[in-house]
Image 1 (cartoon, chains in turn purple, yellow):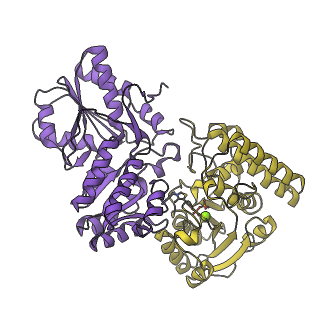
Image 2 (cartoon, rainbow over the protein chains, first blue to last red):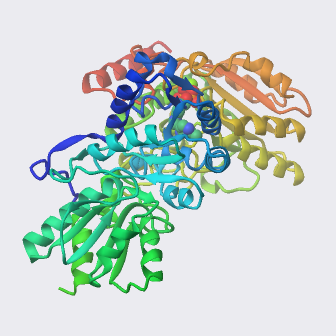
Length: 323
Length: 274
Ligand SMILES: Cc1ncc(C[n+]2csc(CCOP(=O)(O)OP(=O)(O)O)c2C)c(N)n1
Ligand SMILES: [Mg+2]
């Protein structure tokens, strides 16, 4: 199996998004004593060890107890703290689901839920440690913004906005170093997709750590086939940027969505549902993890196995473009 | 198997689990070394199970709640003949079922664990079913001390006592450490004996690296009729390798080639002394 390795010559390499998250947290805490991180034996994976050393009064440890993590975070937020509840996405969005639904979203306590090592970041630790359900489940809860930053730039912006926003928000972060996806587009607005590559012939709408393989596929499409594909980092999954979807769909060109999530209920189905009801009939395909016992392997092996790779996205594009 | 052979087996299992962690370049080393003596005693002296007929409804059940210490379980099951040891060569490789947590794809494994706080509730269900069906098999789980704060455990502690599940044995791998630090600093679960007794369990404490003592406790239940059994196994995380013992970073650490050599040498030397 040919793996889609990171090619440093393509784009400037950055750090893991969760490292940028913790750095930004340190910067915010330096001038705001109300910034609080809540952890569940998760500060190591959340890269928050230095944060905890610098600001021991701004970290609350609950031990391995993710339900308590979210409940405690709701209380802290209710009392005016800018609260970030940080735990692996798999446990945070499954174990603590009722606390998220009732104590954060329904009771409107402005917690930022930070799901770390999300998707299949944990690779060979297996399904207990994967979060392939979180977009679907979080989407089905009212009053919750869902953000999955693609690169370091988006991550920093998202963390700063979340701290200022004062609203329930779920942020999904991965563990792998990410390249900077656009040298030119430095705008980041919650609820607005970020165009990381312009293109008229088709659109690839991706999110989180799948924007990079989407970008690579678009590059190959141009080099090998002269096709110009737009690549969107749809970092905000809810509320969805429907204006942008309208624009991408107008000419009836193919649309492919890509996500590190099960096909059920994720970004692709959100886009499809909106577009179909608006009457769009573009060739459309969702690239995601299928509804099956997930293949075992590293994140990259799992991505490659399911076509979430340059090659997979390229082949699907060619098929939809009828080249 | 003689007691001496059993002791040598613990050394062999330690050497082997390190070998496969080293090969796979991944693994929960410290917690595997702290519980491997318990697994050795369970699988070689306590559990009534048959590798050839694992799904026998009358078998004793063992569900590893601290699923991350899977390497200790994998080498123990291989040694007991559940599958050829060579299967472990594929540990953590693409499409291998030998991954970083136990799954039922592998002969000998009862449940897919890895998210903490799940083993005990499932065991409560198994133990209730055994009582309903008037069966005499026993149900065992192994929990981590860092795992204790999960609320599901305390819900299950109540249920086990409520249903008088004296066929249930929860073993605590009491190594006093988790990922962030010492367990009493991360989330204090001190006085665990008093807590469990107050919840209606019968509690025994044992040196979790003393095979004879472990066997004595695990084979002589129920400790009190009508009460679930809780065994506090006092252990050392990283036990058996001097530079890993009690050192936090070995929760999930892969030895360098030099460290690997040294660890194997230390274990060989310990074997000679038995
Ligand atoms: C629900 C859940 N939360 C968090 C984790 C991540 N995790 C794996 S092992 C571990 C520490 C466990 O400590 P302990 O139970 O004491 O195990 P041991 O010391 O025996 O390795 C954590 C936090 C997990 N596997 N499941
Ligand atoms: Mg422990």
